[in-house]
Length: 155
Picture 1 (tube, rainbow, N blue to C red):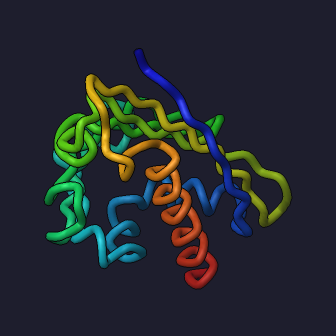
Picture 2 (picture 1 turned 90 degrees about the vertical axis):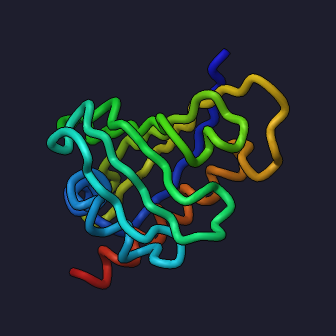
């Protein structure tokens, strides 16, 4: 049965800038903002919308294997929502049978955005503490904060 865990972060970046960084320029930005984790992101299928498949190539020794393949399952430019489901490698190699992260952005001021994060997951057996949603959400929020800093410095 799929379970959900939600969290959120408020960032000091405007909605459209944050959306562009999170949903459109993702492939280029991710290796720049977390170069100690992600070597590169390859778009191997699709055009950046629903159905697009991305491969995240990790530096060795990151504890989740050397790659993670994800599919964009949601891409709503009006509601600023993007969903990424792990379909191979990464968390699936650590005992999870399903893992999806959904980001939904809302403007709360001219240069303020609320980032709602929903992690959907399932597992068939006991899982390691390091991949429980409370832990994986910490790395997701770290990514959001790092993206915020990058976008503020790029402005």
